[in-house]
Amino acid sequence: MEQVGMFINGEWVQALGGDRTEVVNPANEQVVAAVPRSEAKDARRAVEAACQARRPWAGLPAPERAAYILRAVDYLRADAERLARVVVAEQGKPLREARGELEATIFLLSYAAEWARRIEGDILPAEGAEETILIERVPHGVVLALTPWNYPSVVPARKIGLALITGNTVVLKPHELTPLSALELGRAFDRAGLPAGVLNVVTGVGEEVGAELVRNPAIQYITMTGSVDAGQQIAAAAAGNVTPLSLELGGKAPFIVLDDADLDLAVRHAVSSRFTNCGQVCTCNERTYVQTGVFHEFSERYLAAVRALRVGDPLDPNTDMGPKVSRDELDKVDRMVERAKAQGARVLLGGQPLRGDGYQRGFWYSPTILADVRQDMEIMHSEVFGPVSPLLRFSEFDEAVALANDSQYGLSAYLFTNDFRRVMRAIRDVDFGEIYVNRSGPEAFHAFHSGYRRSGIGGDDGRHGLEQYLRKKTVYLSYGR
Ligand code: NAD
Image (tube, rainbow, N blue to C red; front, side, top):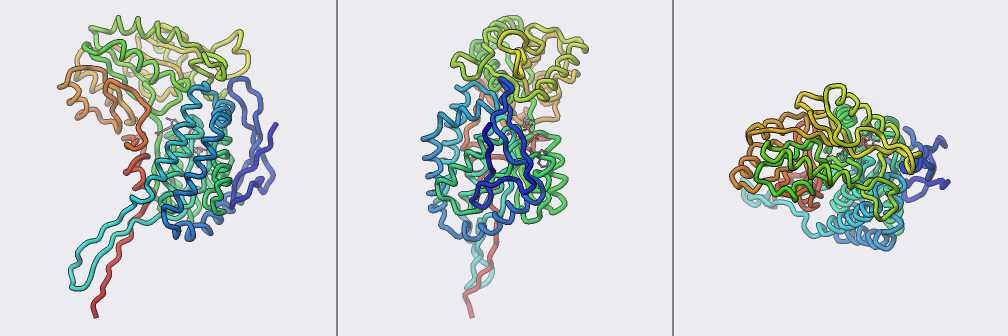
């Protein structure tokens, strides 16, 4: 088993207390590596390093900062196949998807570097003679990035690229289940010669070292992607220092199919937006609403397409779906489906963990479709984050809009129709941060990814995402006598 260090102040180090946590391959339960389990003193060490590095880094011209990022990109590109396999080993998604995650990682960092010559401020006419007013865009200082396990490479890259190009230094704390891909990002930046302390990757448990980092008053901005529960705890702790933050939290995306929809298209996207990454995507189709006229035909075709999914070894090129990320996550999905069944849901497909040949070890759940669900059931309101798809019939368009909006979440929503008026009304009335019409994701990284209600605060990507890593400084300048 590999003993991996973490990256603090330009060095590969162990936790000061000497503790470690193991990283387990979810497809076979083998221990892949052990990483440091940090505590408060490690958190302080990382934040101090990031503070030391802050002014020199912010003082570099942005094109020089971009050059470091692009050098790291070169290392990632040269090593992409190995890194995709690291994603598979710690997270369990099929290799095909992991390769896509590495491509997106490389793309996002390259995209961040493109901002080098585009960070601009404002110049305003002043009230007095021989005076001017400047509004500068300046970095926050030290940014804390807390990232989840479902995209262990691309979510850290999404955050550190924009944080670094805007002149911040970063402490990255990846999820304890999947720290290896984030450490690989640290390694690429290390090889690129990034000055010590500019990027620090600290491993350990969220409630332990994560909470310590959140409470540290030297952290000037927090960007977190993860669950609503953790987001609430982090927001409450950040309030202690009034630290600004961005939270990208869970989702419960409605997937609406109207009578006139192209059913082939709708079925294809319903499958990919539910079963990609074993259903562990914040934008996943979590509840499918189908209009009465096409309900029967859609259900038949959807069932056939989902039945055809091949579940198994993520390294097999023919595999469509891998395991859940951990035993806890598997059990959570299983309990949710059991409660739905007890409330009257009828299992059309799956409905239980996978057992038998090929599934003896690892955290396998069968692709599942549930019928006879009602809107008041838990399965229509709580995020499943697994390969489980409840189907519900509706008759009127307005009813579908009301069902979609009946959620504590507000991240992504899907609509399949060719009716221009209904598309426009849905864009107006569906209260979600991201609406996909006749297509599914992935989202474009130069657009904006943000959720309403409990799905979050702030957002990632594009110009609006970049803005989050900058604060404004207003300068009143007099050059008169
Ligand atoms: P999680 O909330 O358990 O962990 C996210 C990160 O926060 C981890 O690094 C964790 O260690 C840290 N953390 C947890 N509790 C903390 C605390 N009290 N203080 C400081 N840090 C703490 O999330 P997860 O289980 O890894 O991810 C799954 C969730 O993420 C799902 O709900 C999913 O919808 C959501 N997600 C959202 C988006 C989005 O863009 N909106 C993208 C991916 C995943």
